[in-house]
Structure formats: C-alpha cells, structure tokens
Length: 415
Image 1: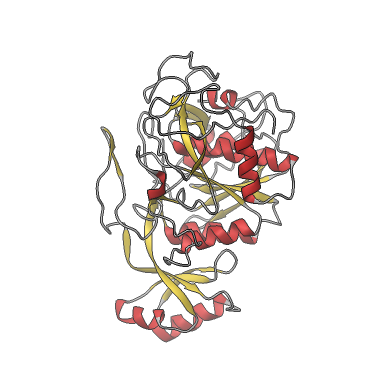
Image 2: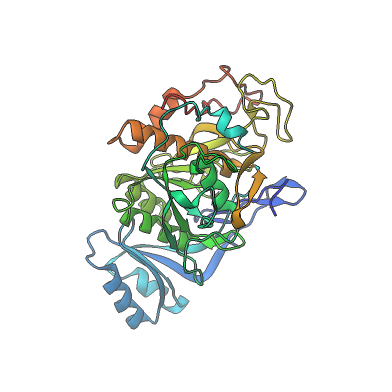
C-alpha cells in the first residue's frame, strides 16, 4: 500500500493545527499544495476547559443539555475538556462560558506513511546489553497488530480512540511498523527492535486508512497520561503530523489544544519522540514537530548498508549516510535517524519495507527507552540532551551536502 511512496500523516492541519494550509504528497512524488481550511471538520470542536475545573465530564454533560451538543471524547488528564459537534448558532455561547479557556477546531489527521532493519544496525542497538526492560512505550498511531509473533509478547495494553474500533489492533500497518522498530522481540524470527525488552502500548488514534481527527489524537495523549503509572509509560512515539506552528507557550497563547495536551503529558513524565515530516521544508511549519518546548523532533537519514561512512550504494532519496531528500529540517529538529527503506513488522503478522520520518522517529523512541532504563528520573529535556550527547556528530559517519541538517544521528550502543 505504501511501498515506494510517501503518505503524509497530516495531523491536524491536513492535518493538525489551526494554522493554514497543509501539504499533500502527490502520487508522482512530493508536492506541496495549499489546502486552506479544507482539513477542518465542520461543526466539530475541542472545548478546552480551565485548569481549575473539577469534573470535565459533568461540565460536558451540562453543556450538552444546555446547548444541544453531541459530545464524543471527554478529556481529564492531559487536558480538561471535551470534543463535540456544536451547532454554529451555539458556538459563541459555548466560547463565552466562564468555564471555557478556548475552543479549537477539530481537524483531519492521517498517517506520514512510508520504508529495512539496516536502521537497527545503523544506530548500533544490538551491541548494547541494555534492552530497555520494562520501560513502557506508547505508539500513538493506527494501533499495533496485537497478535503479531514479533510483537505480542511485549504488548501490555491497548486503547482505541476511533469510533467503531473496540481495541488498539492495527488495521492499517503503519503503527505496527513503528512498533517493530521500537520493540520487536529478539526471538530469531522476523526483525528485532531498538529496545526489544521494552513494553508496547497500542494507542489507536488513526483508522484503517491512516486517518483520524485532532480530537482522537488528544484522546490518545489523554489516555497515555492517565495510564502512565499503571503501565510504566515513559515514552510515546507520534509518527504523524501536519501544518502548524508553535507559540512556545504550550498552546495557551494561540489556543492549540494538542500542544497543551502534549505539554501536560510531558510534565507528567512521558517523553515524546515525533516525526519531523516529509515535505523537504522547515519543520517549524509542522506540528507536533514544531513544539520545541515539549517534544524530540526527528529527521530521516538515508542509509543503505546499516553502517556509517557513506560507503553503501545510493538510495532513492540521496547518497548513503546523507539526510533523505524528503526530510524536513530546521532549528526545531533535535536528532536524525534511519528513515529510508526500513524493514519492520506489519499488520496481519507480516513485514514491510517503507520510508519516511515516521520510520526515523521510532529509532529515537526506542533509544529513549534505553536511556531512561539507565538513567531513571530525568526530565524529557534531560533525556533529549543525553541522546544528543551520545549521538553521531556531523562528518563523524554521515555528511550533509544540503547544509540543512546540523542535527546528530542517534546512536544506541552506549545508552
């Protein structure tokens, strides 16, 4: 389905935020097209309540009765609020309620889709005796194949935020691919992950075609935050994104509910690794990568032989050990990781080779699990700084002919 092509996972402005247009990937290659507000879901909103509200459920019920709203998700941990269908005639009254901090438009989200475990070799994970034992990593995505022989023994919980899907089982493949790079079991079959003894939590926020809504993603972040202690969730991977920007104030200045939710989740002890995006553009134009105050943003390295030094054959997206031509770049990007022709697990017990920053991000999520296992009790920014310090510096195994990627490439051998 995705072989040889990219799919953006526009998470809230073709997907994710309320800023402007999105980017679309044409079937012939990468093409940026203005989308205006076409990704906004008419009459669907996320109502963010003030932090001192006691029971978001009670407020949601009351406002539903008073204003004729149809409430879907209620958030109580990463965010206090709810998502609902709100008639336009009632919107101003909802916004004017003294308990409401702000109201966000709900938007479409999809998966950054796109390709083998040369990546595991390239980050040198297998030589590390640390396997991330017991560290919970949430995959906020299309779910995970709950019966996959390379994954099932590491899956400890699952949650669906998609209507009609009762579990976090993956009916698309993207989330399973991400999960395999993070923590596929070292069991002599298939592939092995960066942290093969970490625990996986499947959080389904995108449907079978890789689509979802901003509100469903916040539902996933909220559930992860509420259940972090129960399942020892220390890391979350978000291989999804879309057009947007950061106010560097956790969404409180520009009314960004997703940003606020991730900040609160990070403050609760969950470190987020996110894809930088596949538009050959500045990552500060895309969220959640732009949220430099609360996430680790990851670009994609083209690596063909699983080894540093640039001695392998050229890839479809650049020379060996250079940054992929599709990868976003810029000051908000913290680390690079293998993201071209990545082999990993797939739905239905299978395997697939795809490419994208979606495939790079889980290399960092798995590395974060290793680092946290060795260094418990650190903040997300200390974890980011530790990964950066241990990473491969520019010209120490990779080069950047583009001049756009000063970020180091993650290495997992010493974590």
